[in-house]
Length: 409
Image (cartoon, rainbow, N blue to C red):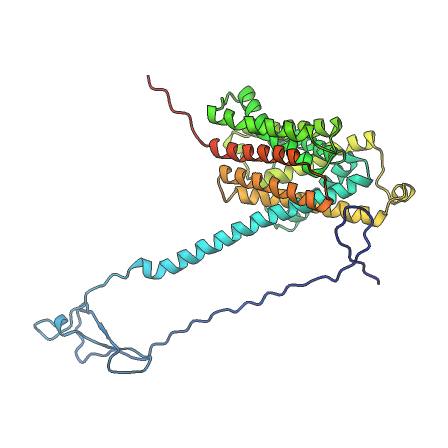
């Protein structure tokens, strides 16, 4: 059997093989042992046991064994020993374990953020490579939901994650979320197929603007002046980047804008419909259910709009490298599902504000990495507009937690 390894490249197919690298981790467990070598005896044993205190004496011996002797001050008038209980400071035993646990949690959280960014970078690269040569975004999105559905079924079937018990009322409440989730990802893929990855994510930096508008319209949450002020650089930066974008076209621009509206509508709907405690579920379970529902919602739409265009016969007739298209579509789908799962795992460990800041940094990382990988031409004015928009997103994530002062009567 012949095995072929491939590397990333802006175009398909790829010819440069490289040997797989393997990393081996070696663990060195620590073994702790303790022995007791001395026994304490007494010539007189009273039927009514009296409490005794012992002093540690290690000066008379150079061995590792400790000898115990009673302190003279602890002798009572009858020559018997009087024991006093001494408290052991909890910090002596718990300090090291607490520090070790804190370090482990920090390393774990840092690893999750690293995986979040890494999966997102690879998703955008693989996805763009496929969409550049295969111009059927609905089918590409359907493949991503199909792979996610298989992974969710695998986790539930093997009890890797607890399979939820869903009622009809819960499904009815989740259906609108699944619909806007489907539209959000579909519009994102449509935009990625038309414009550069960096430009799509620059436009998607306007998500806070739509979040504020939709929350005010449907939830009655009026923004503070600080929040409104942070939206100015976001809108201005996106506008400046748009007018100087080399790959600009209106189809890609409006698709990214529609993705913003869809994704923020999902957040508003989740607050509006998932408010009852009996309907509440953790984010990973909710995302898994939405993924499965999105697949069934999009499947008939894909067949009607684009037909069956993902067969080997069609890809070969279109002159495409069938093997590379299939592999990169699968990798993009795996990275898509993985980065969203990791994102929800992070959200369970940090505050929404910290997660929002991390998401802002993620967008910067994706834009920079895509510009480098695809060698996207970027003018100084375009780069400045993108930087201003991202700075506004970071500012928004910070001022969002500022609560307005309560009005006094």
